[in-house]
Amino acid sequence: MLALAAAPILLLLVVPLIGLALASSPADLAVGVRSPLFAPALWLSARTTVVSLALVVATGTPLAWWMATGSGRGTRVVEALVDLPIVVPPAVVGIALLETFGRSGLFGVQLGALGIQVPFTTLAVVLAQVVVSAPFYVQAAAAAFRRVEPDLLIVARTLGQSQRGAFLRVAVPIALPGLVGGAALAWARALGEFGATLLFAGNLPGTTQTMPLAIYMALESDVRVAVAISLVLAAVAMLLLFALRAAPSVWASITRGER
Image 1: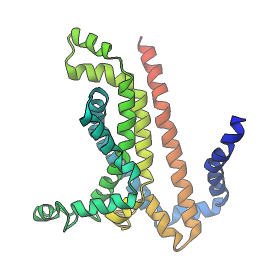
Image 2 (image 1 turned 135 degrees about the horizontal axis):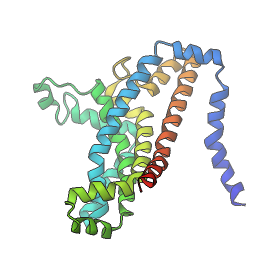
Image 3 (image 1 turned 30 degrees about the vertical axis):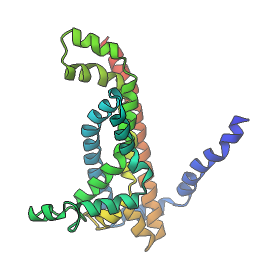
Image 4 (image 1 turned 90 degrees about the vertical axis):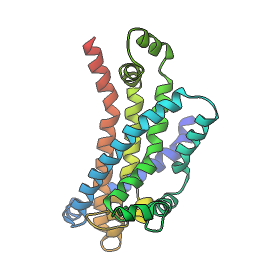
Protein backbone atom coordinates (compact mmCIF):
# COMPACT_ATOMS: atom_id res chain seq x y z
CA MET A 1 0.00 0.00 0.00
CA LEU A 2 2.80 2.41 0.89
CA ALA A 3 4.58 1.52 -2.35
CA LEU A 4 1.49 2.48 -4.36
CA ALA A 5 1.24 5.78 -2.50
CA ALA A 6 4.90 6.52 -3.22
CA ALA A 7 4.71 5.54 -6.89
CA PRO A 8 3.35 8.86 -8.26
CA ILE A 9 6.11 11.02 -6.81
CA LEU A 10 8.75 8.47 -7.81
CA LEU A 11 7.42 8.44 -11.37
CA LEU A 12 7.34 12.24 -11.44
CA LEU A 13 11.01 12.30 -10.42
CA VAL A 14 12.19 9.64 -12.86
CA VAL A 15 9.97 9.83 -15.96
CA PRO A 16 11.04 13.37 -17.02
CA LEU A 17 14.67 12.23 -17.05
CA ILE A 18 13.69 9.30 -19.23
CA GLY A 19 11.77 11.66 -21.50
CA LEU A 20 14.83 13.89 -21.75
CA ALA A 21 17.02 10.92 -22.67
CA LEU A 22 14.58 9.76 -25.35
CA ALA A 23 14.20 13.25 -26.83
CA SER A 24 17.72 13.36 -28.25
CA SER A 25 19.31 11.04 -30.80
CA PRO A 26 23.08 10.46 -30.97
CA ALA A 27 23.17 12.84 -33.93
CA ASP A 28 21.37 15.54 -31.94
CA LEU A 29 23.75 14.99 -29.04
CA ALA A 30 26.71 15.46 -31.38
CA VAL A 31 25.16 18.71 -32.65
CA GLY A 32 24.81 19.95 -29.09
CA VAL A 33 28.38 19.09 -28.14
CA ARG A 34 29.70 20.87 -31.24
CA SER A 35 27.59 23.95 -30.53
CA PRO A 36 29.63 27.09 -29.76
CA LEU A 37 27.56 27.43 -26.60
CA PHE A 38 28.64 24.09 -25.15
CA ALA A 39 32.38 24.10 -24.38
CA PRO A 40 32.66 27.62 -22.88
CA ALA A 41 29.58 27.07 -20.70
CA LEU A 42 30.80 23.66 -19.51
CA TRP A 43 34.25 25.01 -18.65
CA LEU A 44 32.80 28.05 -16.88
CA SER A 45 30.40 25.89 -14.86
CA ALA A 46 33.23 23.56 -13.86
CA ARG A 47 35.52 26.40 -12.77
CA THR A 48 32.95 28.44 -10.89
CA THR A 49 31.34 25.52 -9.07
CA VAL A 50 34.72 24.22 -7.90
CA VAL A 51 35.63 27.67 -6.55
CA SER A 52 32.22 28.22 -4.95
CA LEU A 53 32.24 24.77 -3.34
CA ALA A 54 35.72 25.39 -1.93
CA LEU A 55 34.53 28.69 -0.44
CA VAL A 56 31.40 27.09 0.99
CA VAL A 57 33.34 24.24 2.62
CA ALA A 58 36.12 26.48 3.95
CA THR A 59 33.76 28.99 5.54
CA GLY A 60 30.73 26.79 6.13
CA THR A 61 32.50 24.08 8.15
CA PRO A 62 33.43 26.35 11.09
CA LEU A 63 29.94 27.86 10.98
CA ALA A 64 28.36 24.40 11.03
CA TRP A 65 30.52 23.38 13.98
CA TRP A 66 29.49 26.50 15.89
CA MET A 67 25.83 25.80 15.11
CA ALA A 68 26.17 22.19 16.25
CA THR A 69 27.92 22.96 19.53
CA GLY A 70 26.34 26.30 20.37
CA SER A 71 23.10 26.94 22.20
CA GLY A 72 20.77 29.78 22.93
CA ARG A 73 18.77 32.26 20.93
CA GLY A 74 21.76 33.44 18.91
CA THR A 75 22.32 29.99 17.47
CA ARG A 76 18.67 29.67 16.47
CA VAL A 77 18.76 33.08 14.79
CA VAL A 78 21.87 32.13 12.81
CA GLU A 79 20.27 28.82 11.75
CA ALA A 80 17.25 30.73 10.46
CA LEU A 81 19.47 33.16 8.56
CA VAL A 82 21.41 30.28 7.00
CA ASP A 83 18.14 28.76 5.77
CA LEU A 84 16.91 31.99 4.17
CA PRO A 85 18.41 31.40 0.68
CA ILE A 86 16.53 28.09 0.52
CA VAL A 87 13.10 29.67 0.95
CA VAL A 88 13.80 32.97 -0.84
CA PRO A 89 13.30 32.74 -4.63
CA PRO A 90 16.60 32.79 -6.60
CA ALA A 91 15.44 35.89 -8.46
CA VAL A 92 15.18 37.72 -5.14
CA VAL A 93 18.68 36.53 -4.23
CA GLY A 94 19.96 37.94 -7.52
CA ILE A 95 18.33 41.32 -6.95
CA ALA A 96 19.62 41.40 -3.37
CA LEU A 97 23.17 40.74 -4.55
CA LEU A 98 22.81 43.41 -7.22
CA GLU A 99 21.61 45.94 -4.65
CA THR A 100 24.55 45.02 -2.43
CA PHE A 101 27.45 44.93 -4.89
CA GLY A 102 26.07 46.98 -7.80
CA ARG A 103 27.26 50.50 -8.63
CA SER A 104 24.43 52.09 -6.66
CA GLY A 105 24.29 49.27 -4.12
CA LEU A 106 25.27 49.07 -0.48
CA PHE A 107 28.99 48.63 -1.20
CA GLY A 108 28.94 49.90 -4.78
CA VAL A 109 30.64 53.24 -4.13
CA GLN A 110 33.45 51.69 -2.09
CA LEU A 111 34.05 48.95 -4.65
CA GLY A 112 33.96 51.48 -7.48
CA ALA A 113 36.58 53.61 -5.74
CA LEU A 114 38.84 50.56 -5.65
CA GLY A 115 38.18 49.84 -9.32
CA ILE A 116 36.33 46.62 -8.53
CA GLN A 117 33.26 45.63 -10.52
CA VAL A 118 31.32 42.63 -9.26
CA PRO A 119 28.03 42.44 -11.21
CA PHE A 120 28.14 40.86 -14.67
CA THR A 121 31.51 39.23 -14.04
CA THR A 122 32.65 35.69 -13.30
CA LEU A 123 33.01 36.72 -9.66
CA ALA A 124 29.29 37.47 -9.62
CA VAL A 125 28.61 33.91 -10.82
CA VAL A 126 30.68 32.51 -7.94
CA LEU A 127 28.98 34.73 -5.35
CA ALA A 128 25.52 33.75 -6.57
CA GLN A 129 26.46 30.07 -6.40
CA VAL A 130 27.88 30.45 -2.90
CA VAL A 131 24.75 32.15 -1.56
CA VAL A 132 22.28 29.62 -2.95
CA SER A 133 24.35 26.51 -2.20
CA ALA A 134 25.85 27.29 1.22
CA PRO A 135 22.71 26.41 3.25
CA PHE A 136 22.69 22.86 1.89
CA TYR A 137 26.24 22.23 3.06
CA VAL A 138 26.04 24.09 6.37
CA GLN A 139 22.87 22.36 7.54
CA ALA A 140 24.11 18.91 6.51
CA ALA A 141 27.47 19.55 8.18
CA ALA A 142 25.83 20.80 11.37
CA ALA A 143 23.66 17.67 11.51
CA ALA A 144 26.77 15.51 11.04
CA PHE A 145 28.67 17.35 13.78
CA ARG A 146 25.76 16.89 16.20
CA ARG A 147 26.31 13.13 15.95
CA VAL A 148 29.86 13.47 17.31
CA GLU A 149 29.97 12.36 20.95
CA PRO A 150 31.24 15.21 23.15
CA ASP A 151 33.04 12.66 25.34
CA LEU A 152 35.35 11.80 22.44
CA LEU A 153 36.45 15.41 22.20
CA ILE A 154 37.03 15.55 25.95
CA VAL A 155 39.20 12.43 25.77
CA ALA A 156 41.18 13.93 22.89
CA ARG A 157 41.79 17.09 24.91
CA THR A 158 42.97 15.08 27.93
CA LEU A 159 45.42 13.25 25.64
CA GLY A 160 47.05 16.53 24.72
CA GLN A 161 45.11 17.64 21.65
CA SER A 162 44.32 21.31 21.30
CA GLN A 163 40.75 22.40 20.62
CA ARG A 164 41.62 22.74 16.95
CA GLY A 165 43.40 19.38 16.93
CA ALA A 166 40.43 17.63 18.53
CA PHE A 167 38.16 19.16 15.93
CA LEU A 168 40.34 18.17 12.96
CA ARG A 169 41.42 14.73 14.20
CA VAL A 170 38.23 13.57 15.92
CA ALA A 171 35.14 15.55 14.91
CA VAL A 172 35.86 15.92 11.19
CA PRO A 173 36.68 12.23 10.49
CA ILE A 174 33.54 11.10 12.35
CA ALA A 175 31.35 13.62 10.54
CA LEU A 176 33.02 13.12 7.15
CA PRO A 177 30.17 11.15 5.48
CA GLY A 178 27.75 13.94 6.35
CA LEU A 179 30.20 16.60 5.23
CA VAL A 180 30.68 14.90 1.87
CA GLY A 181 26.94 14.46 1.44
CA GLY A 182 26.39 18.13 2.18
CA ALA A 183 29.14 19.07 -0.25
CA ALA A 184 27.46 16.96 -2.92
CA LEU A 185 24.15 18.75 -2.39
CA ALA A 186 25.83 22.16 -2.41
CA TRP A 187 27.78 21.36 -5.57
CA ALA A 188 24.65 20.13 -7.35
CA ARG A 189 22.74 23.25 -6.32
CA ALA A 190 25.55 25.50 -7.56
CA LEU A 191 25.75 23.61 -10.85
CA GLY A 192 22.05 24.11 -11.49
CA GLU A 193 21.85 27.75 -10.39
CA PHE A 194 19.97 29.93 -12.88
CA GLY A 195 17.83 32.77 -11.53
CA ALA A 196 20.27 34.56 -9.23
CA THR A 197 23.06 34.18 -11.78
CA LEU A 198 20.96 35.61 -14.61
CA LEU A 199 19.96 38.72 -12.65
CA PHE A 200 23.26 39.37 -10.88
CA ALA A 201 25.83 38.15 -13.43
CA GLY A 202 23.93 38.29 -16.70
CA ASN A 203 24.19 35.85 -19.60
CA LEU A 204 27.52 36.74 -21.21
CA PRO A 205 29.10 33.89 -23.22
CA GLY A 206 32.49 32.92 -21.86
CA THR A 207 32.14 35.19 -18.83
CA THR A 208 28.90 34.45 -16.98
CA GLN A 209 27.04 31.99 -19.21
CA THR A 210 26.98 28.74 -17.24
CA MET A 211 25.37 25.53 -18.49
CA PRO A 212 21.82 26.39 -17.30
CA LEU A 213 22.07 29.79 -19.00
CA ALA A 214 23.40 28.15 -22.17
CA ILE A 215 20.32 25.91 -22.19
CA TYR A 216 18.12 29.00 -21.87
CA MET A 217 19.98 30.64 -24.76
CA ALA A 218 19.77 27.52 -26.93
CA LEU A 219 16.01 27.25 -26.44
CA GLU A 220 15.60 30.45 -28.42
CA SER A 221 17.52 29.15 -31.42
CA ASP A 222 17.62 25.34 -31.54
CA VAL A 223 15.73 23.08 -29.14
CA ARG A 224 17.95 20.15 -30.15
CA VAL A 225 20.99 21.95 -28.79
CA ALA A 226 19.15 22.78 -25.56
CA VAL A 227 18.16 19.13 -25.10
CA ALA A 228 21.68 17.93 -25.85
CA ILE A 229 23.26 20.35 -23.38
CA SER A 230 20.64 19.34 -20.81
CA LEU A 231 21.56 15.69 -21.26
CA VAL A 232 25.25 16.38 -20.81
CA LEU A 233 24.60 18.55 -17.76
CA ALA A 234 22.38 15.89 -16.20
CA ALA A 235 24.92 13.16 -16.90
CA VAL A 236 27.84 15.15 -15.49
CA ALA A 237 25.83 16.10 -12.41
CA MET A 238 24.75 12.53 -11.72
CA LEU A 239 28.23 11.07 -12.23
CA LEU A 240 29.91 13.56 -9.93
CA LEU A 241 27.10 13.29 -7.40
CA PHE A 242 27.43 9.50 -7.28
CA ALA A 243 31.20 9.88 -6.92
CA LEU A 244 30.78 12.24 -3.98
CA ARG A 245 28.20 9.93 -2.43
CA ALA A 246 30.60 7.00 -2.73
CA ALA A 247 33.43 8.88 -1.04
CA PRO A 248 32.33 8.03 2.54
CA SER A 249 32.39 4.30 1.75
CA VAL A 250 35.86 4.65 0.28
CA TRP A 251 36.95 6.58 3.36
CA ALA A 252 35.52 3.87 5.63
CA SER A 253 37.42 1.19 3.72
CA ILE A 254 40.65 3.18 4.02
CA THR A 255 40.23 3.73 7.74
CA ARG A 256 39.44 0.04 8.31
CA GLY A 257 42.58 -0.85 6.37
CA GLU A 258 44.67 1.43 8.57
CA ARG A 259 43.49 -0.34 11.68
